[in-house]
Length: 368
Image 1 (cartoon, helix red, strand yellow):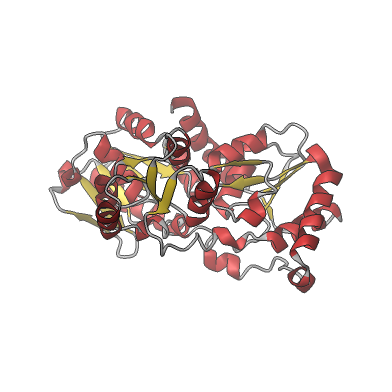
Image 2: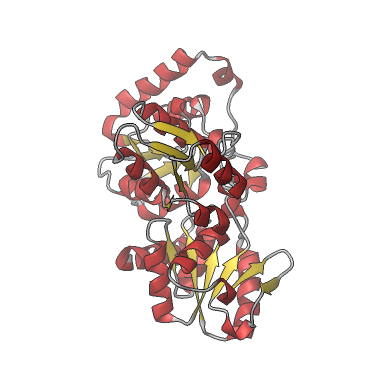
């Protein structure tokens, strides 16, 4: 679901009374419902969530891990997903039919996922297959809508995560000589480059202009990158890296592979959210880190490792604005409404979309 669509949804919005409750009152509401429902309720919380929300999460993680954990909760009837829309969709794809997934605020979208809609993708596929025939396999980052996952699954492709992208790109090349990587050009470029694909053999599909942008010969293109990006990670720059190198010459720089190729190349380590967390956890006391990822997570890492010097690679970075739509009032409202029998914002992927989307997810889970 696009952010514009979520903002204009006819679904119920947060009642005013929740805006007037104090923090202790809201927290007590959440605790009460969690206690009443017990194992029938599962609250997954993405790493980028605010502290006021993540404190109540039954599990923390990235989107795929949380969707898998949701599916593993045998007694859970309700999954109240503290993340963004595509994450709740993935949870719905993997959970049982008798488990219902809810999103506390329907405005919690993802700008990256919104950069590839199904109509644009179908038009792009028509033009690219006219140019290259049946030589292309589509891959999509899990940070995409269920409709895009479904398209990829229907065309023989698979999903990828930032942790297994290299394995899945290698798998794709074992099937076809070319791949289309949706919707994050930076993860696609960084992954392909690390696997030895020259930048000259990569092209970018611009869905707005509906054109393929390429510096080299078209017939030598191996990777077609969708022109999309993460609005948070694209804001880390080589100037940020240069500043850290000058001011903190002994500090290691670790960034997410959704950052640009230039930033990844200038950093010491590039890896998924779990790689970032684990690398800092396993580092010795006194070590120093500049972290290039979402600010809520960076601040949490700083709080959890007082024995280390940790800063944001870009101290002026804002938290993910759409992820921050999930706040304590929305969580309290969602849970209290659930307890009263009228929960808002159920996320349900229609079966005609869900079937091929599960194919894409399962191909990843089988091969990565």
